[in-house]
Image (cartoon, rainbow, N blue to C red; front, side):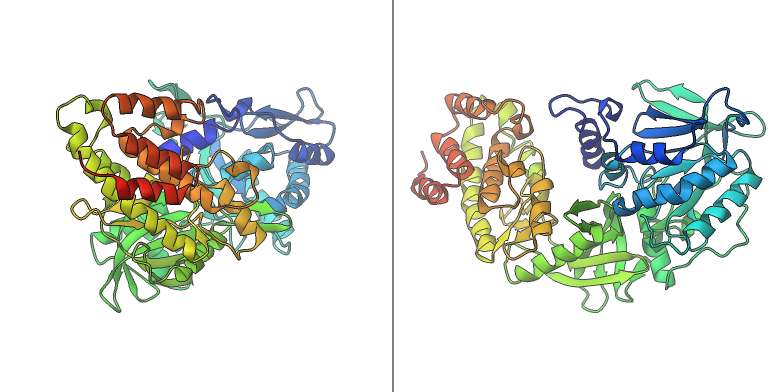
Length: 548
């Protein structure tokens, strides 16, 4: 399982219970959406909880009850920003009732937040409501009626990557897929769903982050021109993920389907040019909020990293303010500008919008991920601590890295910035020189930031590197970075910090045992001092630490 999949699993299965992994179906839902639907549905309809959804159906035995939906067909998806959810119920539900079309909706605001979150699988994201028209004629008539009902309303939602946008709507999308599909139990306990081809064969019903029809299905709206981005560069870079062919879908459409589309396929030819300046040459990572790419600044010839943000993904609300991934990317750009000139921080190059996506361009830094460096055979400590010479090779590396890390953090703090997510994933290190650089400033805040941004910083970080008091505060403090630095150094000895939330006492027990096995007491002292934000004391330990 890659890191992104692991984060998604931890995020989803850790919501219902803080100590045990449980499916979201075990989480109690809040009443906002349920109450709104009860107000809008007539007595002949019933509302049932199913997993993360509320299913609305006509009650068995009710007069004029329509036949159940077919096993597959064109389904309509409604996307929504959190602030527009109830209004969209008011617009969509009466139309569904009139057409006797069954539907499901996110069970509550927290479930909607999960569906639109950064770690949600991109092929499943954005689907606030799903409508099940009984046939293609009903589908075409229903989606046009919904379009007329919503076109003049101030409602919008994130782009649904697996679907095609209907006309110029900001909330209506569609795809062909299973309604009541055949299922197969996989060896790992998951289930796969299938479409049934005209010859009776089963075809996988894949939720890809791009619009794709089965070979035997024709798009009933194929004659309608899809809304296009402002430039072909934008289309090729991820701006039009709803395009019908893989070649036309974007950077935000490539990872889960291999290199079938967008930036990654273009890498093999001429690459993708963004903003008429930045040549994208490959993808480093994907998440639901957008991709992270590497490329070249054609103006200067310098290597760059390009980070992408999609509107209305990863939303959260503070008071009457809704913040999304685009707001956070713009904020990250401002933080980088505040830190300009520091050797440990990448230089911000540009911030621009192309089609509906926003892009941050920054200097590309060389190095390996911090956790990869300490996992190398010649460096890794914990499994081989009893081997002769292993501790002796580890100690000079630890001492040098700790001695460099502390002033790096002090320089950032001197600019009024708290990093917020200092972890092995967000530090690069040169394996030869041990020079370190910080990357990923998504959670960083400045002391003068507005309350919404200060609050966001307390919510987003890496498990195992979060100060125990962090979630109880309304803003980040320098002690959060020092605790994370302590855990960062702890992870060089044994990467077990993620488990300390289950048993905080284990933090000291592990160190005591490792010291008994030969790790110098100075390691324990440095970690303990930094965890308690006693920075000067940690610096004295490092300064006085002699060989032998």
